Structures are given as structure tokens and as C-alpha cells.
Image 1 (cartoon, rainbow, N blue to C red):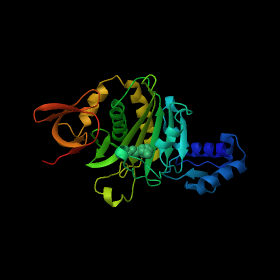
Image 2 (image 1 turned 180 degrees about the vertical axis):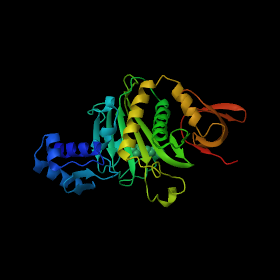
Image 3 (image 1 turned 90 degrees about the vertical axis):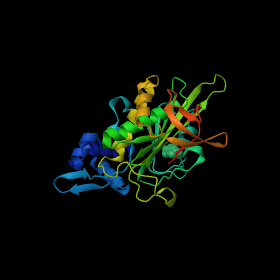
Length: 317
Ligand code: BTN
């Protein structure tokens, strides 16, 4: 049944706004009429809005549900066969990727419609309501040691996806928060597992939380969080596929310093006075640059310092 349902959804997704009779669908996907009817019923139960018009057939009305089929449909041909683990609900896609880190193929994708324990950097929560955002993790095995660079590269890949699909300009706040109009719209949490024997990274989980059409942010973040797709008709499936394609692509360019150049262009901290915490001590300084490893070059009382961990706050001086 899963395969008929999946084939019906893929066909309707591919031909949005076109109508298919039950017979045409059955013929196209090589299933019986009754299997197609069952699949349509199941898809409707799952929330898909499938129109049925007499003498015309079925058509997928604009819906914004995330699905494995929908994401796969929009992926680049070279990534079409990637393994996608899709969840309606999960504690955290990063947790799930880490649970199967040794057994799962690499690269593979973990996507969920909601998270019950979405995690952010520095032990924080990531607000993860159902059906309004995208919670995505990529499990990859990089062939070089990436360190801080990977987070910066992922931020560039996601920024490019937003700019190319929605036309909005984004800014990156070191190290990995993406902003539109002064509101944070994306958070990135990269976690690595390295081997103690050879000190090499065995696998990396790249977690990306993308606020798409969140209706009500909680009180504590409502003034600082924003959405990416509020003024756009792009579906979350298409957007998610673009983000995956861009990240997989940028991971092949890890020695290409033009990516860091792009990161610097989009940075909203270069030239700013900041506050940062190092070894428990709160310090102040001016960001001079971001080096090719993704670290901040900060001037503090005439002394240059390199900051490669923690978080910075831009000061309104
Ligand atoms: C941050 O803003 O501090 C990082 C947020 C990262 C959130 C994403 S959502 C998908 C993946 N699963 C998680 O639990 N966290 C990351």
C-alpha cells in the first residue's frame, strides 16, 4: 500500500493543477483501481487536499504538507536517490541521526513535520511546532576535517537557497544564525563524531531548523524570530529540497575559499562592536574580519584576538 500511495502522491505532485481519473492513475502507476482509491482515501486522511471533479478526476490542491515524495520530486537529479527518513513527529532529527550514526548510509536525510525536543546551540531549545517549519538533518561523512568551517559553509548554502527561491536578502550572524529583516529565521546545529584512534571525524550531523510559516512564536522569541515563506507561494517541499541540494553541493567545495568570501559578504557582524564570552569572562571588541577557518578576528583594546567558539551579541553603541 505504501508504494501505491507514494506513487499516487508523486504523480499528483508532479502534475499539480492537472486532473487524473482513477483509471489513468491506476494505469500510470501499474496498480488496481481499488488500490488507487484506497491510496487517495489514505492521503486525504493524512491531510492532503485532493480535489475530485466528475468527468475529470483527481487533482492535488495547493497544500503545504511536507512529504518524502514531495521533497524527492524537487531534488536535483544527482540527489534523487538519496535516503530520506521522514517523520510526522520525532524528538529531534539530530538525535535520530545520531542514534543511527553507524548503521545508516551516508549521506542520508532526516526530516520531520514537528519535534518534541528540538535542540539549539549551547543547550538551548529550538521551537518546533507542527506543519509550519522544516526540521532537517543531514548525516554525512566528510572526507576532510571541517571544524568550524562546516557551519559557515552550511549557512552560505541555506542563505543561497532562501535568496534564489524567495528573492529576499539574508544576513548571517556569526556563526550560523540566518536573519531576514533583523529577525532570526534559521538556526543551524552541526554535531560531529570523531574517532579517538585517529582523531578523524567519522560522521557529521548537520541540523537545520527553518522557520517557514510559523503563526505564533512564543512570547520569549516573538520579537526576534521571523519566517522565510510568509510572502511566498513556494512549498516547504520545494524549499527543503533546495536546501538539501545546496548543502550537499557546498560540502564538495570545502577547499573553495570563495565560499568564505560569500560568508563574509553576508556577515552582519563584520565592523560591529560586539560582546562575547570567553572562558566564562564577558569581553568586548570590534569585529575586524572572519578568517578562512570561519573564526572571528576581533580587536580588543588594540589587541587582535581570534574567537572560534561561543556566541556574540552585537552591541548598540
Ligand atoms: C540554534 O539556533 O541554536 C540551532 C537550531 C538548530 C535546530 C535544528 S532543527 C533540526 C535539527 N534537530 C534539532 O534538534 N536541532 C536541529
